[in-house]
Image (cartoon, rainbow, N blue to C red):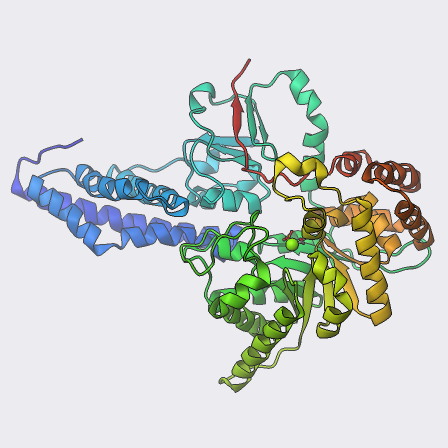
Length: 579
Ligand code: PEP
Ligand code: MG
């Protein structure tokens, strides 16, 4: 609302009031940034830099002060005049990523307006427990001020899969749905909400019967999210004495704590793309990456950390504000293909890994390898970068190993040749199943055809362990399947002794391994290979494994019978108002 100022001296007071609000806003944001860094890691705290930049924009401030003086208007009106114009410009942009940055500007404007009114903001500290936040939009900076453990979910009318909130929520394992149109009038404070991030459903005041029907999933989710026992020091051993190495798949710095708690013997797969996605410039600098990788390596000492170089894809869309890391599709410019075309980005990442490697044990993993030339080219770039570091002042010498992801059928069939060029292999079954069966892992329409138990997949995996056994090549399996006890036993029986998985699954798999002998697992794998459909194999596994394991395996049965757990959260949105 415009208020006309009666006296000239009031105009200058208004300018001072505006300048004071900017100063306070900057101080608050700097403090929030430090707090957010501690909670979700440095990469995601960069989100607040966008707000800070907005507050430091001198031409914008000049325009606002000009508005106050020219129209003898109150500061609130002058702020809205200037910023509405910018917001409208963002609205008209075609690029989804930039359109969504509109909310960053709105947050910064809200903060200025709040400070102009002397407001204190929402008292996040006093929010109740078991909270699902429903809102039109939500400012990530609020995470810094609240106890995130109280938060159980997030449902927003705005945003999409590339919005910062979606990025952060995924990393926090926080059930979240973005972009549900106009649902707020149907929800009131204190309502019970059922939020299903996997299927993109939000149900207000669900009936007891509906809650009951989803009880298994809720319990499974809760069980998976529970902290596990600490200080496990020994590797799991089968009843006949085979030692198995369990490692963790991670993508966010704070997941390292879960990996350590679970007793993971290192990070078997660090999905480095996540530190790229949250970054305001689209990709972090060498120095920023160095910091992240070094912290990771130091935290996991004496165990190794396998850093996979940037692997974007259809289900992992790069959200950067720079075209150097373009969004890709599954059959397109993914993984090593993109890195070899964007050598600047690739060599910065390699330099950061090699420099950070001086702090402990590091492995470089090349994703989506299809040809031997890709390995040659990547190794040449690694060697060049190593030279550069050695010739630079204070450049230390880290020892490192190089491995290739085996996730494309061509890589399996050329395994003997590829294996000679690398120190180890990482089998990515999420992609291998997708490419072998020609089933897009993110397409719900073909989810029923995504069958890790397809006989062709089992033959492929057995062939891989045969070749690795013959050539004495170290091999690790790091697809999602290793987190399911039925698959894990099958994999052991096929000869995999190093599995990497979501850290939350490690305690269960550890227990399963200690309940079975390698001889039994081998027999189970052999019999599975004689069967001709995924369904028969699933039925056989359930029958053969369940009586041997002293854990309730019911939650895992559904997954092997109906393995369509690849529908990404935030993909489809629906809201069911109360009946
Ligand atoms: C895989 O493909 O199995 C894998 C581990 O990598 P991602 O899921 O990140 O593609
Ligand atoms: Mg993969």
